[in-house]
Length: 230
Image (tube, rainbow, N blue to C red; front, side, top):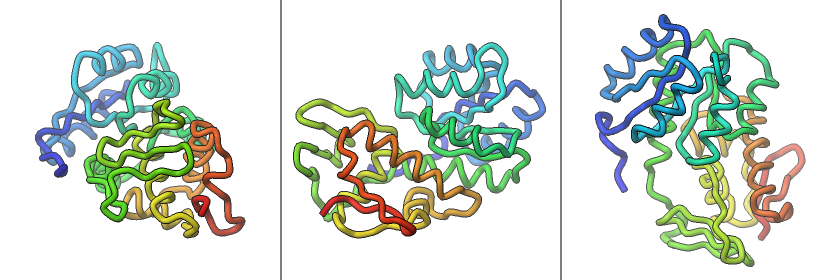
């Protein structure tokens, strides 16, 4: 599967400030993206239901429904990549957003160059073909990971993962026993780890363990990072 052309990617931009909408829409359109706008949480959900959306840029502070609730509802129905915007450099906000399923976050104020870089990185990662030694399916005990279909089954039951969770799982189980640092996992996911808190990985790993129901499949290597059970 090839990375889609920019003009085929649709971004839902959710922010209640008109100035921010204008500031972010223009550079995205210059990149060739189609941009849908929403000014509050309820409108965001309606637009998401009505249109095909490839990525959501979601402000934390919104009228009607706040960004955290919108993120929770979106993630309950779709693995669409989500970037959360927050005006507060508050670690709790970031962690809660990740707990609810956001894939990345960026704190205002930020550079337009960095913003575009984050958007393109998420879209690029979401469209990359899987690569794990040319194997289509990786089996670990009762867990089956279908790389071509991006499906995960546990004892025949499908497990819904976000694209970041799937990529983390794929990277770890493809090389069982190998230790990956948080920085290496961040770089593998987004191409770099600048501006990103390494604890982002910890939150996604915790989600994976909860969903897979096997806390020993992904093991913590204290002071280093993580590995899949050999």
